[in-house]
Length: 257
Image (cartoon, rainbow, N blue to C red; front, side, top):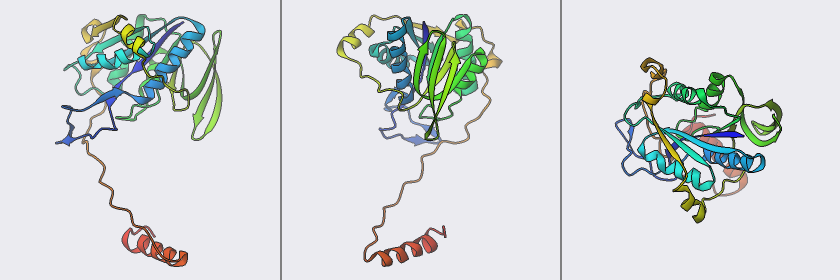
């Protein structure tokens, strides 16, 4: 079984992010595998171990993206591919990403493609479904369970707190949601093995793409941090007094009543 995982390098949102003149300051910023992509990596390994085959992790990024690919290899993926766009696509968007991936998969025979449900930096959730459309294969999003029997996938899909049961034939692209599995931590032996696993690097010129195909369809107007939250207020006294004070605050200060 040929299994691929789409991986993205994202900011570590547990660290402080600084914005200057509408741009995120990358110097000193910490980067990680997009957390939803970790579920995708883990599930790809589970399915590979059960059904055989090979897991290839693919990312579009720069020289620094090798770190995240090596982490995925240390988790258990077999191979990695870095499509290096360093300085070539500073203004690329989801449409650009899908065009690049469509070209990459043009000569590949993929049985399963895993992706994260969303990326925590932009949260568009577009790349997976749009790539499946471009490749003319089935797509199921926000999956929380996956069982493969021959060429048929039985899937549980999260639908706003409920569960939808879906069956689909392979090839198939799925996007992975929290609850699907518990991503493993790379072990020391896994980290050592990852150093010897193949990591192929491609340039945009290696793909059959015209410059106009890579032009973004969207423009980012501004980037800003949410306003800081003010201190909370503790209401004291009897319950009836607290209710009256709360109503007064909502009406006179917050203007929501």
